[in-house]
Image (cartoon, rainbow, N blue to C red):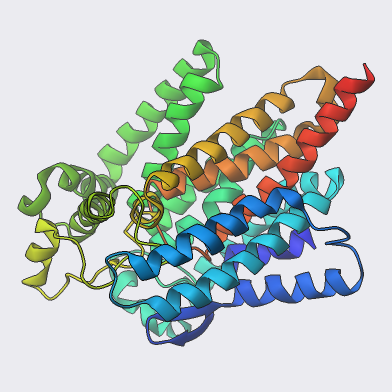
Amino acid sequence: MLKILFFANTFCWQIGISHGESKLGANVVVTMAIGLILLVQGKIFKKFPLISIPIIAFIGIYSLPIVFIGPCQDEYLRAAISGCVFILFYLVAFEVGRTASNEDWADLQNCAMSALAIGAAMVLLEVTFPELFPNTSGLRSMGKYSGIFSEPSALATALMPSIIILLNASVRRKVIFGIVSVAVLFFVTKTATVIGVMLLYLIYSIFFKWPWRASSKVMIGGLITLFFFTIFGYDEFVDPVANRILGLFLGENTDQVSSMVYIAGIQDATGNFLRTFGLGTGFNTMGCNPMPYSSIRDYLAISNLDGLNARDGSFLLSKLVSEFGLFGFVVVAIIWRNMRSIELISMSKKMENFYIMSSVISSLLLSFLFLSMVRSSGYFHGSIFMAILALGGGFRLMRLQIFKLNRL
């Protein structure tokens, strides 16, 4: 079941039934269906997972009531329904991750390779039969491909967990597969999402994982790669991404809409944090009326673009801070702490039989943290689900570690 959910939440989170601006993703339907099957079979919820009580209390007792006493004058029904669905979503995902075996988690490295191969096949299909993908014809004219996804950055977001799983693998051919996948993904999508996540990954690895000799080799390799892209594809690859990054510092003086939308997410998060005194606006209410003041959104309004990504904050961290206030930082800190603890388990000789499992789990948490700083697609997209799966698997791994240490 872990493998099915991995693939469903890699490729199906943008497919679903839409109603207004809300959407029920196919990944949620698959997750709930599998949860029901496992429940009937008696494989999950044999006893209520007490570790899940804090998240239920946080959303049900704190975050949802905040919606009604905060600044929002709408979005009440959306917050209530999505909050209840997310609690069920969380419980099923956590239980599937917690009950999955060591072998199931280890197999996700092979699943990651398959997912990247499927992603490549989708792009090849779009290149060969563009008439099957009419909604992305404008992007194709710029040499950008996204397969079944709505835009190239969404394809990059979907495949990033698989890439990071392979980059953290101990088998060289899998690492090479991951490195090649990064280059291919950037080549076909030309999106700053790939660059942003990879920069964060390199910074993290240099300071927390790799010895200096390995780090220096990677930095030299990165500079050589950048040199070749600059010489042979500056206008097509380097210049657009550089302009988007530079636009983050230019604000209203840039012509990059994606950069302005990212800055608007920062301004929205800051405004919501201040006007709620650090409490947040409540679960899934970002973009509610009245919105906080944002100079960038005023500028975007000139082109009638002020509503772009208003609900998802442009990147997930801004959404978490907007809706949960100080607790948004607490959520990120908890995931960071769990990721580091699990990563250290993979280095322990006492837990060497669980190396691959701990490597996969920490990779999924790491990809969630990186993507939360770069992009957002709400609370029901793939990387969030995989992070919840990983938290469940990490909980089991921690208990196994304690059991082994107690036997020594």
